[in-house]
Length: 198
Image (cartoon, rainbow, N blue to C red):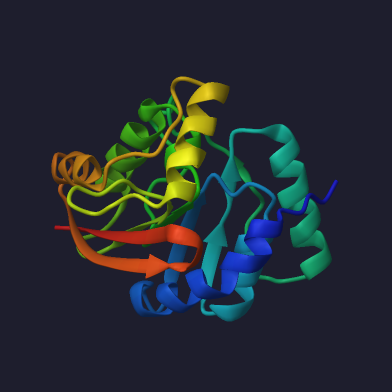
């Protein structure tokens, strides 16, 4: 049942270091596209004052998340929700204090990002963060060769996938009442973008 992703083991600590400066002191954090479940376990251990709500559209991923939760024995993680960001006009949560989304934007149709940002605009309180992690294209910044190859590989697997432009995400966020407040360069040519509800 439990799945493992080598990248999750490598990037969870650097991501958590950034989250330490961005997450609220208390409240509910929704993780969108939780994948294997390894990230949310690490975060729940490090940020025990927060309640974590994992989610994923894939039933096998949710089974993996549930297995990780059962093994961890932590009391601050809820059962994984079925959530497809691209198709859910009304999400199965009414309000959250923060949203974290790791490695989804480029491995999903644009509709998933549009749904994610629209939900952030609805669900977050004023000042609440939407934290995005992954590879991005940026105007005026040379794209690493590894990211160009990754982008081509993604598009060959699914034409609706591919690296997104950070300026496009800025505009999308602004249309839903969010403003970018941070950009952090991460290992392996990844970037964390933080948006907050205005």
